[in-house]
Image (cartoon, rainbow, N blue to C red):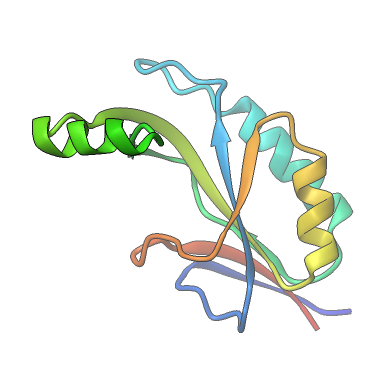
Length: 127
């Protein structure tokens, strides 16, 4: 098994399973990335297929209230609740690896089918 590391590269995996992780262990003024590095270390030892990750970055996420009447009021009043969240994106070639990764997380992780276009990844490729 040969391992190749692609640092700061665009997504080149065909049909990847992408998981977005919201890191809750951070402060707005001081970013504590110890939990991210623990997750990275654990993933390196447990996943043996091709996978990758993006560096955690602060993203502005907008949320809207789900009720129909509230949506109408939000559109009329232009009220959007914005929050910042420290997020990283993890990609996998195997669906079972992605599921194992999500189940082992203390943070909130969701599978996404679209991710920011300019996102670069560090990809561990196994032949």
